[in-house]
Length: 119
Image (tube, rainbow, N blue to C red; front, side, top):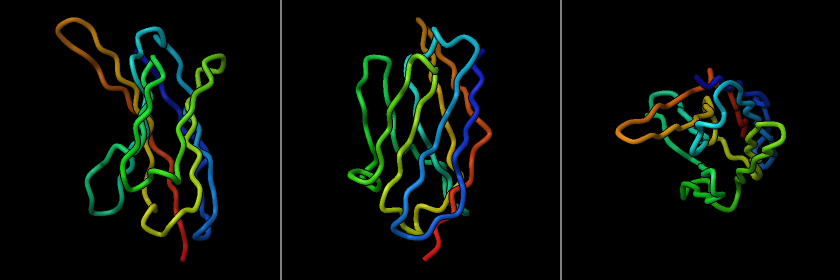
């Protein structure tokens, strides 16, 4: 089992910055990739940034050039630096960890942290 706890959300004006943190605990050795998802009101949850255990990083087009995902292995923490925030970035942001094994896998989720961007 993997436990994820997000922090760092809040209210920010458009053009501002926030940094989200996701602290992982438990069976960390089993994690193959971690990512940040977000879900805006009335919309589906979407993957916006991911990082694999090998260090491969991907971003959704909507955040490319503005957001940056990183990790601190010593602290078992993944970060999402969000710059030049826009009102459309308003959403609940969720941390995700993916564990894969032969024939299966498991998704783990944090409880989410709310980011509100005012215009």
